[in-house]
Length: 396
Ligand code: ATP
Ligand code: MG
Image 1: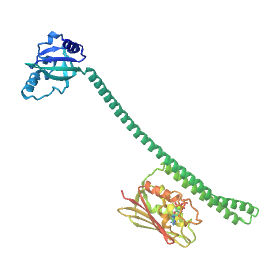
Image 2: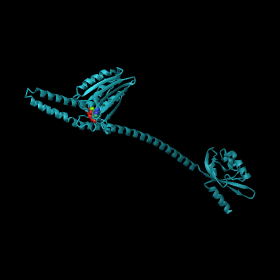
Image 3: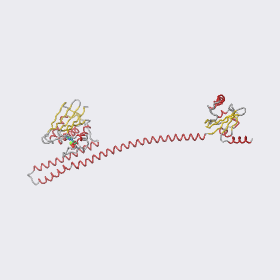
Image 4: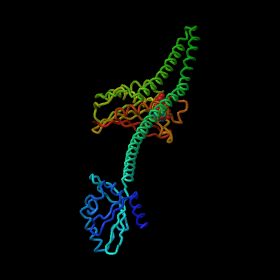
């Protein structure tokens, strides 16, 4: 009996709930821990079907669980244990771990259920899950922020490097101008100085008026050269700043070409002649007079500069139903093959220019003017044989 009392004491003080049922599912005994868990008094449970302690669907199925076991011997929970839901008297449900064992007495078998409340573990688990979900949410939010931050940073970086590139380009252009100017200005400036001091000398000799005129002309020429270099640079600055405006109008191309021929003939070398010819429709074409004149003057002045005395410069214009093309061809020094790719870069001069003056800005400006007018520019050149530049515009 000592052993029986000890067992009863153990069951009464157990932390887990212990319930025994008979083979019809009726509760035979329930310990205080189980009563506490389910919120019942012993008399409310004992003798009643244990399914009263379960929510649906177990509540309705419990009898068939026992029946199935008894007919098939197939154990679904006995000796296995699993997590199930319990139903309190208050109607609230809670999770617990159920372990069932079967005891054989003389004439009957009893099932004992050990009930270990999992409410706190489940609550902690749920909290953990919630925390994990919140954390995941935060991480994905931060990741999104980070991605957008990175892409903004990349955009800003690209903008900065673009403006830096432009700045570097502009600085290079300016420093190239300074070195070019210091080189190119020296010749006309020293010729101005020389002519000025000679004029001073001739001033005492009123009979030598011709020498004075010769040197004032030299000064004028030098000043003109300096002005044209400065004008080129100003044109380039305007192009860089995007303030060169294009103003297309129907112009009489032939008239303009004749006017340019006349003007440029004045600065030709000895026996150098510009031969102008027009083919196709005599007509008007939509172009910007100022930009076109500037471009053609540049091309013809190159032809004059880079070819010798006693040569012809062929200047032709052509208008047909496709559009208009203009070419300037000389029989001069030509452009070395290896230099041709760089021809339109600002300040670039070919290696065969020797002491022919120039800044290397002209063609860069010409190309940009032609492109502003939506035209195309091409050239062919052969060393010692000559060069031909062609500009063409499509009819709109
Ligand atoms: P400027 O700025 O005074 O015109 P430039 O004549 O040297 O100086 P560009 O007109 O840009 O500069 O020409 C660039 C280079 O192309 C020239 O330095 C020259 O080497 C070559 N070039 C241009 N036109 C001809 C040509 N008709 N014949 C031979 N070389 C030419
Ligand atoms: Mg030139």
